[in-house]
Length: 276
Image 1 (cartoon, rainbow, N blue to C red):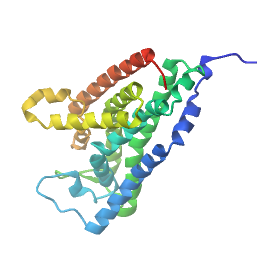
Image 2 (image 1 turned 45 degrees about the vertical axis):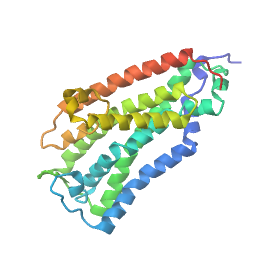
Image 3 (image 1 turned 180 degrees about the vertical axis):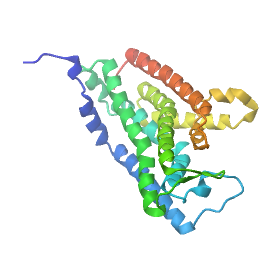
Image 4 (image 1 turned 30 degrees about the horizontal axis):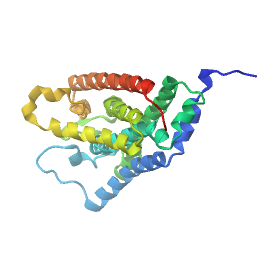
């Protein structure tokens, strides 16, 4: 008979299945996968966008599948993806406490550090899938609605489709890294509260607050230390030559914030009195 082995407690497969069966997981992915088709329908009903004097991705959104995917990512980066990432990472521990099942997991016994690690891995895994699902479905919807063509830049010029796919990989990689700070913040709130809505809403609210403060130009260079300041730095990959400075600063800041927030999460949870 096999004795107790800490490595057998709360397997990743079990946690992944548990999280997948949650209604919020299915609803979140349904919304992300439906958004590109809703936008296609909007463009089909409203016709091609008319330039308003300021070059933007919406002006070239219907030029092809790649342009459409870039536009979809642009409109979703600041809020929808933030909500999705916060949902997966902020709900994971708080929901167990809310259901009064957290103490039973720890009594299994699952070591606290392992419980957090397993839940964090699965939460980040679903967050990655959420961030990738939107542009991938956008490529499918864009190809069906607008065909496949080179990327047309809002400022003029084009990027060949083959080169654009490489740029898209850079953009998605940066989008994932930039959302790390959201994931870590939501996870920190999740281990400090019994309210899943509080953890998710708190993370989204702080991101919104950061965006508001970032709009205060009087802060000057201090804005560069805000976690959301570089969220759209991936647009530098749409230049004729990729500009790496903004993305490098944004990635470094996001990783630094995430490391501190996650370390604090484990520290706080280790000493937390679990009563639910």
